[in-house]
Length: 462
Ligand SMILES: Cc1cc2nc3c(=O)[nH]c(=O)nc-3n(C[C@H](O)[C@H](O)[C@H](O)COP(=O)(O)OP(=O)(O)OC[C@H]3O[C@@H](n4cnc5c(N)ncnc54)[C@H](O)[C@@H]3O)c2cc1C
Image 1 (cartoon, rainbow, N blue to C red):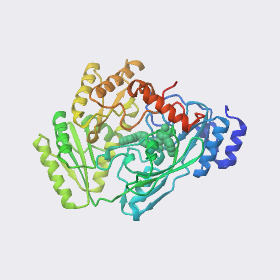
Image 2: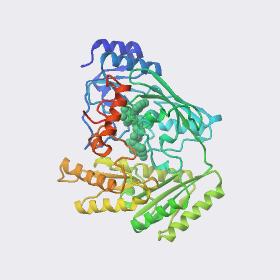
Image 3: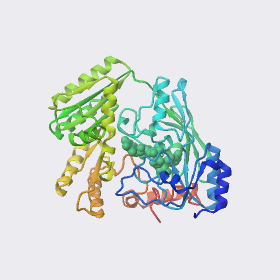
Image 4: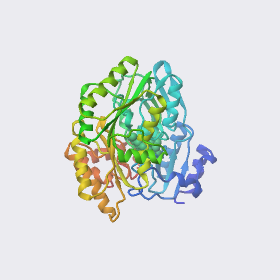
């Protein structure tokens, strides 16, 4: 063990003996996240897992880390896809799992959530008060702290936005251990710089999120999911564009093709219920008034048919809607074992069709399958680079880089959801520039002078 025994003892007296884990077997589950095997960094095993039960304990742990100059890796639900939670140097893994309380302040439509609460728990607690947390970034096992640190998005971000749009206030423990309380339960707040939003999306390199005030919404009484099949990709994108530019704001607007959606349905032991067409748009509508929902359903149906769609499938039944969303959400898991890397490239709204055409050109050039699907409603497209036979690691990285170039050429970005983490640091200097890197370094230097927090993440090596 690289960490001094005196540090281990001090950690034990801070959080309690049973919350400091050293045994190799017990530590194992804190070494990985959901990053695809091809690009996942090797974890170090020389770590101690510490599970504080309060903000004060998090603060004490960080003070100890500074005293001993020990590295600290923050861990949420471990669902990240860019190696952000994987310890790559000996040190402490700080797991927030015990801090999982959620209190719903229904009067103000705000949830006060501890960082270790899962997305699933937040959704459930909000529903008990007839409120909702509409965002749905894929895996409900993600923690609130992780979702904030990654500014997660997901399929249902078109109407109400990504995590950043929900964060009204934050409690953050700075790398040196001071506790910073930011924001309020108000929708508007101009009292001082919006420091809270510096931490949203900072992937844990600037501080540990311990609590948040999150905006909730009244539960929309009426929801519907409409799946529109097409015999051509071009028609699907024309329809998507038409819907987006019509002013109708769906909760979600997703694109996928038959091959990927059937792979997911099969993985779940289900059958994709729509027999016609090879390309699909999935539109989720959510409204307070049923008449409005009906008008929107009619509009989607008409707009799609005008663009040459096949027979749309619409449902208001909760169970059917849940199943459709589940099949869509599990595409990632279904493809995971064959996946070298999963990309979350994002392009401006008007360029989604051009981007997917460019990806199809790359697919044809290499003679491989590039599963493409995603959040067409906000230009965020997922592409799996698979473990193609005969391809070296460098060649597979080359395929990803061709896709990145296609997105950049259209004014897009290489990540709209998953972040930089460990695996995308090598692109940072070239794409974000020296000034960005130096500014981040200066900020990091002010907040984390001993460089203890989340080393090897986001900021490129010196
Ligand atoms: C099946 C599946 C589907 C997914 N779909 C989506 C999707 O649609 N949209 C999307 O955006 N993402 C998606 N993701 C990615 C993932 O769920 C998000 O990145 C999520 O935000 C990570 O949360 P976590 O708690 O699991 O964080 P972890 O994986 O534990 O950590 C992620 C990063 O956040 C840091 N961190 C964790 N907790 C804190 C904290 N309290 N304070 C400061 N830093 C912290 C970690 O150090 C690490 O750098 C998906 C993942 C899976 C497995």
